Length: 320
Image (tube, rainbow, N blue to C red; front, top):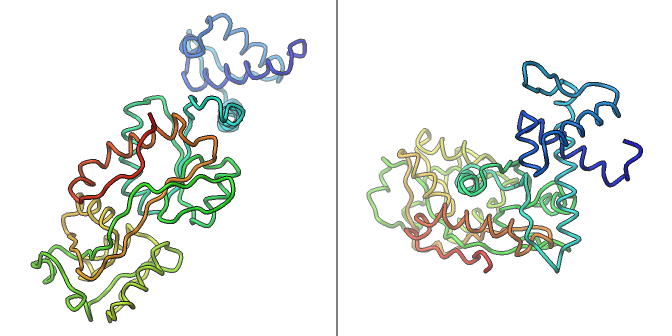
């Protein structure tokens, strides 16, 4: 391998990655747009260079050794970083690259209720797309974007930091979530007097909605009996019928949860006019890129029926 220019090393890395992923030399060659002998030669030279076999060949099949499998994640991360570098170099001239894999970070409620729908729609468009998802505190999302650990974040607060593009997707009004058999469920809408002195499940301090929900109840002088405080939205929602308690959430998440949990329902509270904003954040080189457009189109399609039912306008659309 030493006789080749250093830039050609990436050919070996790409060939290695595709053979591991595809499980065959012929499939890897087709994906790379080169001949099968060319890929076989690259793999052989790579094995000669590292001094150990990377693949086991048996009965016409090829499978990675333990050494190759252990290197797979590092190689994929390297290729992803190379794609990102290329996008940054092309920034301002061309943004036609779609990242693969695509790395998301979002709050827990978004991870549970929104991202599965969005990822499902992206997968229909891009069946070969690989996804990584984590949940970070909003305070750490900007740093994760700058370090290249995350490509897109979905949060309920704007990330107001240098070299981060943060755009509002939509706004959703706060509502009261309750057991479907709760006495208040017979009413079409509620007032603050209705929810006064009721049992309440509250978000904990680590939840982005903690301050806004406390302020909302305090503003309207709502007294309540706190029976559970948790940063885990899935736990909080599941415990509402068990504890026969109420909880405050935005109407989008509330509706999505109620669609698959028929033990829950939600109602508007006349005095609650507070809106929760949802933001999409990214590095500058992904702004108006095909990656952003792919996300926005999938976001719009996956939530169109729900947002139409709730009268919510999705403010951010794919660019032409």
